[in-house]
Structures are given as structure tokens and as C-alpha cells.
Image 1: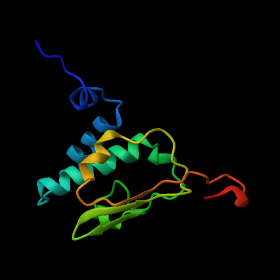
Image 2 (image 1 turned 60 degrees about the vertical axis):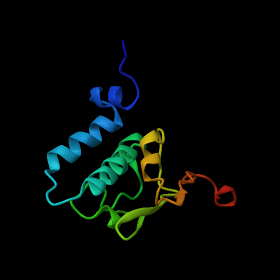
Image 3 (image 1 turned 90 degrees about the vertical axis):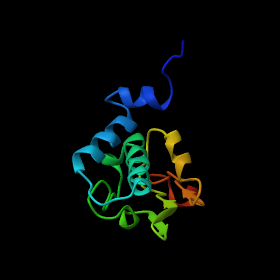
Length: 123
């Protein structure tokens, strides 16, 4: 007999970042988006919820109908996320494992979280 664990279990927990991201995707009723873009948006939304995005210093565009490529700190090449640059943005929480699903095109993750550090200690 197999047991449920990992991502499936995270989706069953309504408080998990993955489940919150799924609910956001579902409730947005995104139309005419490819499966790849829907997965990309779900991964980024999971990241947002996992790092307490509601408390970020800057979150322009995040969790809106705008292309995720226009969200603050997100850069894309041909519609695929290539960079996440959110240093000094008050991220707390944890990096969701689903970020690995962006591995084909993601080559920069910069999350230095020294927003409140003295200037001489910032990275």
C-alpha cells in the first residue's frame, strides 16, 4: 500500500503555500494560458505564500492578472522565468521545493534578506 506524501499532501492542507497558490490559480479562472504558464504561475504563487508575500516591502504585480514576467523581481526570457531578484524585500518563511520546477530556465535566484540590516552589513 502506498501512502500520500510530499506535494500531494501539501495540496490537501488548505494552509500550505501550495494549496493557497492552487486556490488563487483556480479562482482567477485564467483563460487561454498554456499548461506551462499555469504551472509557472502556481510555482511563483507558492513561493509568494511560502515567503509571506503579503508582508514584502515591494510586491508590485504579484498575484494579479498581469503576466508574471512583469511582477516585481521577476525576469523572463521568452515567457519563461529566468531570474528571481527579491533582495532586501522582507522575505520570511521558506523556499518552497516547487521552485525546482523552474530549473529549465531559472538561472538567478537572489533573495538576500537584509532589509533592516545596517548599511555596512548589507550584501
